[in-house]
Length: 220
Image 1 (cartoon, rainbow, N blue to C red):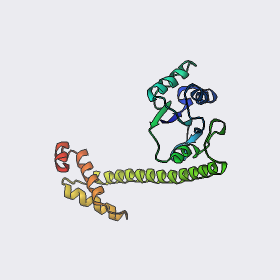
Image 2 (image 1 turned 30 degrees about the vertical axis):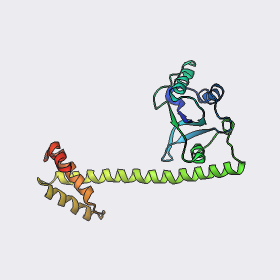
Image 3 (image 1 turned 30 degrees about the horizontal axis):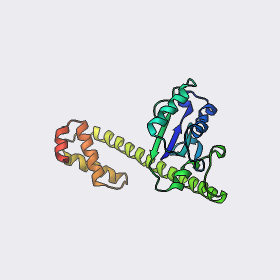
Image 4 (image 1 turned 60 degrees about the vertical axis):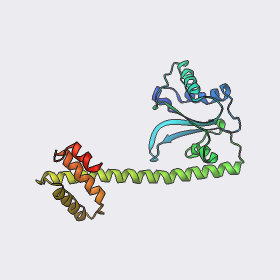
């Protein structure tokens, strides 16, 4: 089976070097494929922004997920650290990745730790994998930032619409829909029927102009 372990030491007040020792312990304790594992040190999130320092450890072995999870928690507990919950660690299991190289190079997107890594590839192949990983991270971060910006702009747009509607005395769906559509045109924004309809119902529900049951009946 293919395992991906993520540990965030600061989430359970564990020193970095102490927490990282779990990698060698897993290698010794379990029958891990000695020619195919990788460990990464990361300090940024999917947006490319600073986040809590954490490490990833991708490895292959025949162990059971529940057994390994319990062992990981016990390993830290024996050292007086309570490693529980998704904020502290996460162990994911796969039967087999669609693309083994891509699964491994996921740990190369920032900084992989050579002393805790063993890959069945040539030095040239590993360098190529690292370059691809960093390029993928750069492009994915850009995409995530644009999505977040779009979401924030959408929320801001609705806030503006609500402020405008507060000054009006509109009571029907038709009146509210047309008002919002006109506002979009005035702001030079693309007019999307579904978006405007969604904002219209949102406002009507917020103001009690339509009940949630009526809204459900219209949409079902």
